[in-house]
Amino acid sequence: MGMDQISSLNVDTTIGAYQIGVLMSYVLFGVTTTQAYIYYGRFPNDSSKFKALVAFVWICEVGHAVCLGHSLYIYTIYDYAHPERLLGAAPKSFEISVLFSGVIGACGMQGFFAFRIWTLSKKLFIPAVIWLMGFLRMLGCIVIFVAGLRMESFAGYISQWEWLATSIWSLSTANDLTITATLVFLLQKQRNNVQKRTAALLDKLILWTLETGLLTSVTGMISLALFIKMKQNFIWTAFFAVAARLFSNSLLASLNSRTTLRSINEVALPFSTPTSGLRSESVRMTKVTHVTYDSEPSLTTSEIV
Image (cartoon, rainbow, N blue to C red; front, side):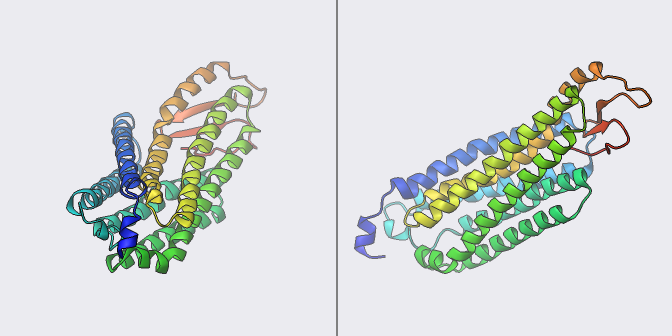
């Protein structure tokens, strides 16, 4: 790196931006850990598959957090007073964090919500598309990780692999939007077949789906835009550091929200209206892991969470 490049470096938009992103991701990691603790305390009877998924995502989050912290230490302490190293090869720990991010997004959030869509619709096409996009995203992160281990300069690396990084972000954002739109459509379809009291529960589910789905989608779009327009700084890395936390927190918030859904259910049950010849319409919790809908024969029983 030449002297002109060194003198033009802005520590606020490079090391400073990355540091802020890492610190914010650590705050969200605390939220993730708290949610995981709450999950195991509230739902001891959950399926072993769900428990294993939560444990796996949390372990990946620990690895991701350690890698981000190590790379920040390299930039701010080990390479202190050596600005020429900033645009050299990135720390190996940063590349490993890319791998963890790909695994968390594909296996945690996107894989789980694809399963939820399948349980709601009992149709495999859209979940299969979501699983495929998630797999391609994770595969792209693996390629980025392997290429990053051989990196000689950050600028050369970005120039060579910009197309793949852009594809990964675009694919992830498209996947998040697909998940959000599909879940909202399916829940709204169920809502049209239930009475007012039960509709309140579905309204809450739709709202949570929009909040979590749009949050990850918007974060992905901002990261992509900053990466394309501002390659000369590290502002996009701040959003990258936070993105994995949003994936895991969306997953855990969805699982833990069943406590609130149960409370809504307990309020709604006393107001069930019997219908002649049919069972009274109600909402019930099964082992605090499922929300099911009972009504006339035309309305099928669907697993919501």
